[in-house]
Length: 181
Image (cartoon, rainbow, N blue to C red; front, top):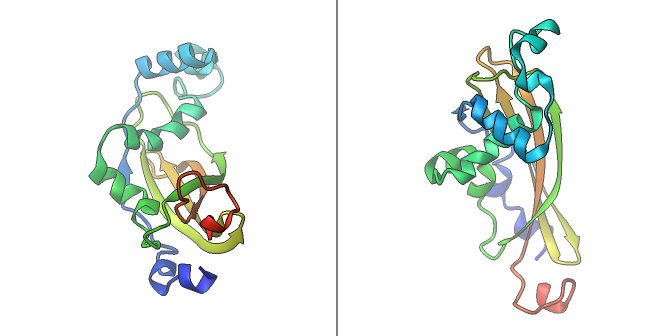
């Protein structure tokens, strides 16, 4: 398929589309304890209110990696309606045979601290859609930006994630073979 065939006007019209603001699961002290147990990251900023206050914070902070995980937890909750409205990439009108999805990169910025028990929300936006030829055929590259907000609607985290979609490969076909095109 050519670039024109995979990048329809309908698909390109999704650039700039934004999801509704989605409340996220509030993280508790037990969530932080499980994170510390799993990672070994026992930073006193996430475990000790007095320590966090001594550094000028109003209380314990959430580990940034845990904050970055929250939007992805929607996928684990089995909440298909909530996920469908949040993860715009899953709604894109790509050609039917474009079912081979790959991670093509991610950048994350932590801009403000998030605090234990603080209600956070998230929103996604399609930033770019391009097509490029490669070993696996004509790829569609979709970049989505996700932002996590605190109760003051300040951005806590911003992530740009690009996925690459390729045509489905026949079972047993090698990447780059004629069966891919």
